Amino acid sequence: MPRKKATHRSAAFFDLDKTIIATSSSMAFSRPFYDGGLITRTDAVRTAYSQFLFLVGAADERQTTRLRDSLSDLIKGWDVAAVKRIVTETAHEHIDPVVFAEALTLIKRHQANGRDVVIVSASARDIVEPIAEILGADAVIASELEVKKGFYTGEVTFYNYGESKAEAIRDLAEKRGYDLHRSYAYSDSITDAPMLNVVGHGFTVNADRALRRAAIEYGWGNLKFKKPVGLHSGPPAKPILVAVLAVAAIVAGGILLSKATERPPEE
Image (tube, rainbow, N blue to C red; front, side):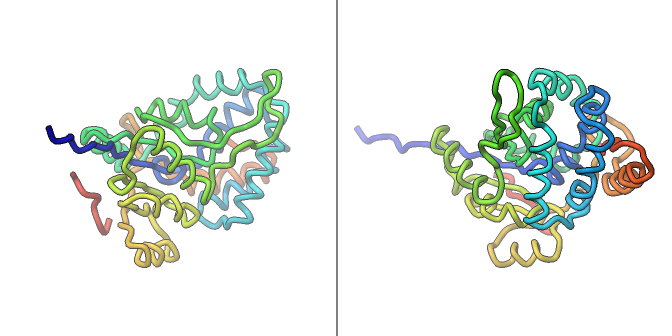
């Protein structure tokens, strides 16, 4: 009797910040962290400029690494249970309004076609997982923070960035039986080139000139997401304007408030 040909599942891998949501996931929780006593005004000033550069797309790899290090220093000594509670309780309030409608449509389309949706983010797992749950994602790949006796030590045990994202995707694909050649990936950042190249169908989101050039070189598709209207009805979010106003408020002594040309195949 002839052996049946093995079938392999495929998946859709989505970057989070500025790909699914129109802001930084870490920045989105600045206000509840402040209200919960985890950060001070000085802490907000310390990270505001790096966050602003990220939001307007001006952060290079060096500045992104600096942001990682500043956030690592910031969270040292935070109570893990308190962070998880704050993120879980406020995720809908701060994330729902900034979800790109186009990203949500893509997520639902992929799942309707039998693909798992995996959120792949450089943000910490404790922040990403509640957001992934809201979005109905099937799995999360995120940065991992060291915890001792219920508190963050400030050490990043796994930084999910650049080539590390691609390696983590390969590892998950091996565990779950994903066929990466038949899988999809979406990102707004040139630093995610390894992630886009590790699958058979890579797509840029709201690409700048450099990323568009890379898309031509590597054969990626290009998508435009324009409607951060979120999971519920309401006025569109304007993340860059919000960021400008937030930085201005910090400078004034306030706090950080909160921060296609080609369609993906239907098959």
